[in-house]
Image 1: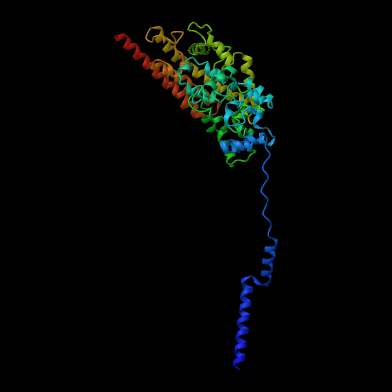
Image 2 (image 1 turned 90 degrees about the vertical axis):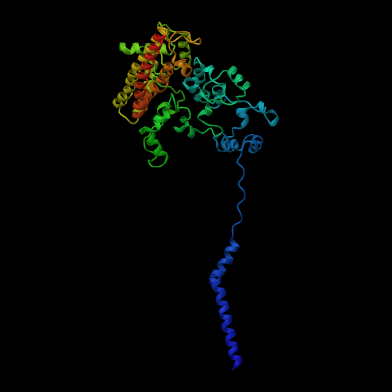
Amino acid sequence: MRRGVLLGVYATSGALLVMGLIAASGGIGGAQTARGQAAQKPAPKPAPKPKPVADAACVNCHKVTTPGIVEDYMLSKHRQVMVGCSTCHGSEHNGPSNVDKAKTPTPDTCANCHENRVEEFKQGKHAMAWTSMKAMPTIHFQPMLLTQGMKGCGGCHKIGLKTEAEIKELKEQGQTHGNASCDACHTRHTFSVREARQPQACQTCHMGFDHAQWEMYSSSKHGVRHALKQNGTLPESASAPTCQTCHMQNGNHAVGTAWGFLAVRLPMPEDEEWAADRTTILKGLGVLDPEGKPTARLEAVKAAKIARLTQEDWQSKRDEMLKACVQCHSSRFAQAELKKGDDMIRQADKLMAEGIRIVADLYKDGIIAKPESSQHAYPDILAFHDATTEVEQVLFRMFMEHRMRAFQGTFHQNPDYALWYGWSEMRQDLTRIKEIGATMRAMKVRK
């Protein structure tokens, strides 16, 4: 009897144990599945093969010394099509001891593969940026680090073409970068076309004091709509022009505008008052002397393509812009909007010329003495911040900051810049010029 009870207990315990083991393994089928999965576990994937590169020795060395450059290069189309380091930098540099033998690329280097685009670039205003900077009458007054050192004007104007002598001089000064031009927009070493097509590619240089185009564009409806495309609020198919849409149609690198940077041009307008105002401004720019005769600076303006000097040249640029506008607007609307920009220049010129004449009379009457660095006893707007009197400092800001914003804001469809940062500021400048001029005359009388 006792033996039977014990056998029953053992049998029950064994059954429970078996059942517990089966449950823990998910049942009989689960146990079999687990064994099957263990048997079928995939083998680890082999390490991906390294991407093929040209000039592997350069890449391997620079992975250690300048890994960021290599990372960018590995993302580039150049790497994909096996354009190696030596294609652009030559093959003489092959180690730490001869870094100085690495060639600095220029646009002509890029032209070996991108001939058409480089030829277009050479026809546009960007190519003349270095020349136009050096043509400014007091540029040599600035610390070298701001010009050749490329921490001021030179930081953006480096996009311009340079002679072999200028490149050599820059190298002797320790400036080994800033000669390639193309990498101002297609930044090295990705050299991305997609990057250069974004409006932000223009932001670094086309912003700030005398050319606030980025601020104007990005807060205009054109710029806002494009920002909404970039963040996904608007679909990719939505119309939203970028800088490149209007100024680089079909990728044309010959960038230029009808009015140019200074918004002066030839021939003179038929409107006699506007013609007289523009003549005064040309005198203030030093392109004409106080008697209205051309100066050597006119040749510099021609060489740097800062202004349109024929009706045909101006009209071709205007027609080019209209082609961009009519992609979204009627021709009638587009022409009317562009004419508003022309009219703003005329209105701004009226204020500007009045300011120049007030200061010119201060020179004429001996209130302001001719600076040694000036050729004529006449205000020189292009002396910029190096002007020697307070009234001329106001005049320079009136032209370079506020007149620029008045007409550029109008063309870039930004009402606030056209009015409050432009026209309104010009009105205030003119009031200050009148007050300072009157004070200077009063002080002269007392003496």
